[in-house]
Image 1 (cartoon, rainbow over the protein chains, first blue to last red):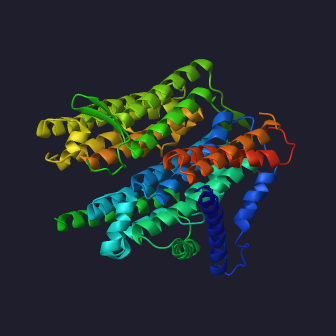
Image 2 (tube, rainbow over the protein chains, first blue to last red):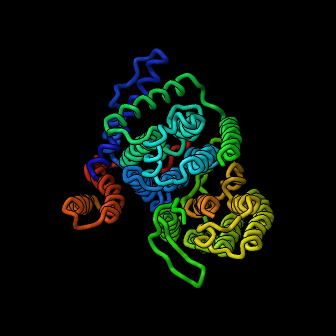
Length: 281
Length: 217
Length: 67
């Protein structure tokens, strides 16, 4: 099990490196090497490190541990085919972790990154509509049952494509350099990550790697169904490249526009769920 | 009952009221517990702020008396969210949720800043208004089905009106601070990271739990 | 925490993970127990390892406030 966890962290970082590479190539730049994010994590881990004088030291360090811990837990939840409600709870609680990263140092940049992270909670609401609709269709929220349902009826991607798009947008809102990544936009230096440097940033990189892997793997498991592990990795890479295309060709939205657009998507999803609820007896 | 949060791990019976943990509610409970411990052991940070119109900056300090009160409120908030996670009864759940609302106001209202107090006052009004749909939803469920036990309602045979579910969710959104006030910069003038995080954490937790309840019953 | 304690912390978390992994492979403990140990020990392993091999030096200062 632990070997899968380490693999997930490394592969997630590799996917993030590929993300940067694809964006760069679309924008006709050479771009960094694909393993750049792994190198970044290692580089940060070797740097000399301390806790800022103004920081709340316990929270400042503890939040790094919590960040890695919750995504390890999310990985095992998806891997064991447990309830996807737990996965999405962890996804939402990641907001609190980002908020904690931002506030714990006392830096104004970190603080605003954390505040933006909380206001972009609007991006989570499509997620709950998606969950409700999956429950409506399959009658269960246990990942094993959803996979079994897809074994009989075919992938959910073809049964209810709007929900796949909604989850795609949810993952998009967590990708760096995307239209919704207001939490780390450049006017805030690095957003909530600003004051976590050195070893703490290396821990954050592990969190990011695990998060990317878990979200993409969950997308494959929920909308494609049971596939061999290597095939899942291939499909994840394809999904990631499609995300990179979106990130490369869209500008970053301003915080309120970002929330408005996510709200509109939620409205559309609600209408579609209402329609399904009407049609399914 | 339909096990959307996983198979029951633990059940404690009080007559027809069952308090239970599914993997889902246990995850939420542990999260509330971790942050309550952090509130107890962590000291507030000193928030840096730039003097308006100049290059100078200063670090805000949290006075001891204010820190003690906000820590007390934050611990109470953590306990209330843990209670809301563990409860298997809708009325207990709504009581814990309204307590989360009260303690959230307390966490913010202890800061002696006009802007923060203004935000706390407005939030207090929303929380107060939010109790109406919250308890109204619970009352409607009791009136139509005769029970408030979540496992009993989940076994089926009861027609829980959709409007009661919507009222319950609306009430929880009103009590939780995050959806309404996170966008207000006034609230974040308050230093004291562990306590402010407890506000957003408890709001998210009660919201996550009501999603489970509404789908289950 | 002193720098001397980091290798011990790393060793403890690594041993915990290896023992849990071996016990799971030998079916001595259920899956949830092993996963709980992994989830607690893995973050500690990462932080203790990197705190151990990081470069020395540096002293605490105030956060970045602008150029």
